[in-house]
Image 1 (tube, helix red, strand yellow):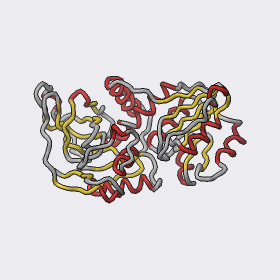
Image 2 (tube, one colour):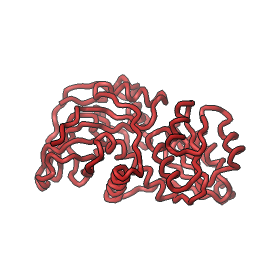
Image 3 (tube, helix red, strand yellow):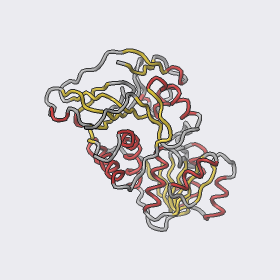
Image 4 (tube, one colour):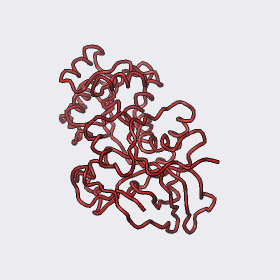
Length: 326
């Protein structure tokens, strides 16, 4: 089968399509014929050899890709054969940039009628993340909520969820076209955070925010923290800048700011959040934004686009043409 293989850590060009052995489902596993593969920012960090956590670093050679959508082609021992031919999405951990992948059957999440596989895969990781963040930092009607990287996969969902909860959403994104995009998602105000005075402008117009979500870290994350009003909330969950936010010691306590950091969730809870995200999409409560699709052979181009900050919403790999539905 065709897969994208990483043999050395480095730039996007290290991702090369090649023929590899096809996996077989073991006991408790299902074989999925992949149509759409998820790409995350973390994938680009793993490829470059900059894993956010050393335990996440892959052993080379590796096939990246932590989530897929496709059709169940075979079932291993102990797996219900009725799953065969069903449309599913699944978190894989590794191996998603490939035409076939064997996954634990328990990880399969059925794709509901009325939802495309691309949309389901776009919500697989980002929908789960956004919903868990909102659950951990519930939004009250009338809150002013700051969302940096608002034009990204998770950010675009946070904008929608916060706006639906009755918040005044301040969306920070890079470039004029991204600002227009986040306004269309429900943001009350959009600001270009590639400009050095972006935080001062937000403070001048809002007086500060009640809640800030930070998936960027670094200097932008610190600026977001400083915009939180005394007694507010700060949700830190990512490091797209390459480094987690560093809050001065004692500053959060001095200002009465509650800092919320991501906590591990169980596989069962993760799948429940994934199912909720898909259901919300079918019901029209959540719109996954797919900004760009790349064929499997161009996985390197997809990584380069993400790193260049030119993408909007979710970036997906199209592994094979979707099957016709009877």
